[in-house]
Length: 540
Ligand code: ACM
Image 1 (cartoon, rainbow, N blue to C red):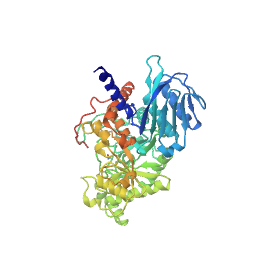
Image 2 (cartoon, rainbow, N blue to C red; image 1 turned 135 degrees about the horizontal axis):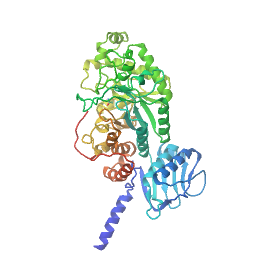
Image 3 (cartoon, rainbow, N blue to C red; image 1 turned 90 degrees about the horizontal axis):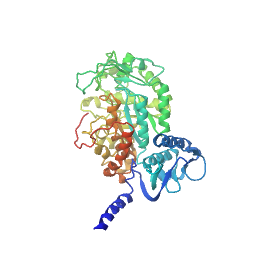
Image 4 (cartoon, rainbow, N blue to C red; image 1 turned 45 degrees about the vertical axis):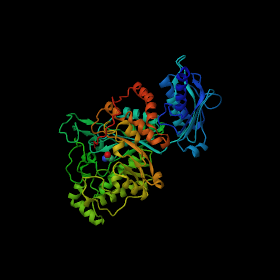
């Protein structure tokens, strides 16, 4: 009896630890081997970094100072300590973002084929650090990790058009994305209810387009209003500061400039951009609004090209998201100008015109060394019950190098898109929309999302380059409420994007999450009371 009481827990501990998963690291690494011994970080431990890893060394130094009040020195060469090195051969083995992390009595070493990989090794190390209660030093148990991501696109989207959140909140999100090895910040900066990005050539976009008098509250059909104005936008200087901050954290920012629909704030600023001429101010209601850019007017193309030119100049990313979702065709159908334009250009329907327009924008971006991305409506498929079938007859096809962002539609549509040669990012709304309640998308459902839909032919799997999770803002004016929607589901989406299918395990994730919840609480991040409700309920 006595023996069993001692041996059984040890066997259980061995069984769990030998599969190497309960390390506290999220997202779960590719392979983990627990080792004997431990490394103790003291104030005398140096960070030893080769020249490509100087930025990583400074980042680690800052982290240890802020999170653990340990001030370490950085050295270029020699001895024992926390060693950061580039090993180009590892990129072949573990991919551009992969890394090897080893913790032994004598040293901690992080090596990778790229400095991005080393950064991710540091993010794993952060999650392994425990405090030695005896002396206040930091203690890390022996371990050997080889890691690399399943997908190259691991995105979080923030909608700031509906409510402007500001630099501090964005930086907080970038910090957490970095910890979780998420690498794309998709920034929804323009929509019907607000234009949030300074464009020098068109100052009214922010003078007029960033301000609205009032806001609908209480849900899609509600007549209730906040009775307070809302405004806010980023200057180009502020955007540059945020880009630099993201860059330090290995995060690419993909700006989204919505067209031809979801454009009312721009039309309020420059009414000649619109088709029906009825928008007098930035809308105060949410939902799908009727007007769209008048895509028969050459001035509209000139405007969009000028805007995109500033956007390309500002953002280092070579991908620009142009939205393209939920275009209501009634405005175009009621316009004689648009109807003539459709005939003159041999187009068959409003959806055909939508593709024609999108391809012109794609051409412009391509000519300037960029690639276009858009929501999957730009393929011209009917994904909305409110669209009339006759409006959807298309002859045109979308430019092939477009990155198609799926949020609606089933396996057939994804299969068709990849079969036709498109790369896709899968953000299927029923699994990845962070504005949906925990009742609709409990944590385990977020975790269960597979960007490669079941049934997709294996030869097309690499056409799915990853996934995104989306924080839409219509009903979430305050950052504190937004945090409760984002955390802890962000951690689940991080694992969806990073962790190999064979290593995904909800119960292990859930137990690792406990440590992260403590970290988040300690940082003042608001967490929901109950994120594990199991019942599914459709919202949007
Ligand atoms: C979307 O949710 N309209 C992309």
